[in-house]
Amino acid sequence: MQEIRTQLSEDLTAATTSQDVEAVRVRYLGRKGEITLLRKNADFSAMSAEEKKRFGQQFNELKRFAEQQVAAAQARQTGTAPAPPSIDMTLPGLNNHLGHLHPISLVQLELEEIFQSLGFMILDGYHVETDFYNFESLNIPRDHPARDMQDTYWLKNGLLLRTHTSANQVRALEHYGAPVRAVFPGRCFRNEAIDPSHENTFYQLEGLMVDREISVANLIAVMRTVLTAVFHREVTVRLRPGYFPFVEPGFELDIQCLICAGEGCSTCKKSGWIELLPCGLVHPRVLEFGQVDPDRYSGFAFGLGLTRLAMMKYNIPDIRLLNSGDLRFCEQFPAAV
Ligand code: PHE
Image (cartoon, rainbow, N blue to C red):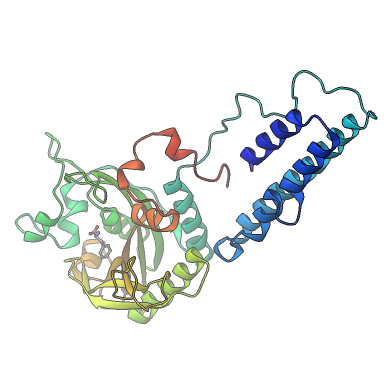
């Protein structure tokens, strides 16, 4: 829209006759004019209510601006208005780069709001963790092969950079006891070979719900509610078996592909399903580590990859863009929330 605005001003400045101005009017405001088409071609079904509102506001403003400018130019050509000033005061200032939130923060804040509406607390944790909270208390003892799946940055003093937000599970159980409902968003670290889909620094959002008689049905219900809210449409989920020492049973949760509705397309690699998050029922040993009695309480946990979700939601093709600090990338996202 900014480009159209600039171009329109330039075209009007270049117009030297009343016919020129009329031609500019048709080019932008006519039935097939650029501004008219902007609304006709907009894909409202892909926009959230907030995006629609913002689009509407910006569109109306642009249209009003164009109509005023054309009328003023027409008046100048017919001699009813003074000559234009030698500077164009309608051009945007040079310093209009407002800061805004990173796409991962945008997704995180949206999820936090949804989980809060379901009664979950938002908790913070530590980037530097102990072996106990990151591994031991999650039923991953010192020589367990599951440690190999998470190539860990160890510090010289025996602490480590947390490899997953699951490190907060036992911390939360110890602190709050049962029942508890919490999500822990945050940054995690693994010694990955960096490529378009792997980073050594990435974001997860962990969820934990422990109460009387929590079952897989509760897990599915909460996930479906949350995912439907995130993607702004009904989402179909399925569970496949997955192995994580701290959940039993453990699952990989898939969603039916939103692009092809399960038909099979390139995004879902023709399977109709997209792998979204690992989850499961909290292992009794984890509850015990958190001083919660597994005979009285049960719970579910899930580990949502915030980085992955942001990439899916905003169609970001390369994970390295996210930590690049490259303004050309960052500036493509909405200016405010
Ligand atoms: N912490 C696991 C990982 O990062 C994901 C997970 C979380 C699995 C919660 C099950 C339950 O790989």
